[in-house]
Amino acid sequence: MDGMEYGNDITITCAGGNHPRLRSLSQYLTYEGLLDGAPCHKINQDILDRIARYQGRIPTYLVRPTERPGEPPYATPFGPSAYLPRRQCTGLFDLGGWWLEIVWFQDNWAPPIDPSVLEHLEGLDFMALAFDEVGSW
Image (cartoon, rainbow, N blue to C red):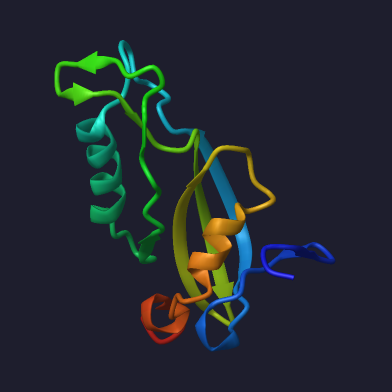
């Protein structure tokens, strides 16, 4: 099963039938540190842009979340309120010495990984994006 635990390992399924293993997982509240008011599209886009821009030694792949309107809608200085899922998850995945950091959003703490994220990752070419620990030294 995708995104499930095998023994002590959690794996995902990617394109080509690859099954990278989750090696570490960090989770944060998406709006942790938002001091006042409601988030809006501009704030959400800033959060996503920061993730997409960061390229440390290990590449980062962002699973872009769906933004939903605030209910009830609130006016913010930058437009109507809009929300991303409540949790930002950052997983470090390994496939035989190839490493990739994957960032996704979901409403509940992981695991389990949200089924819509797992479905998206089935089309991910892990090997084309991952960092080869040995060959990159």
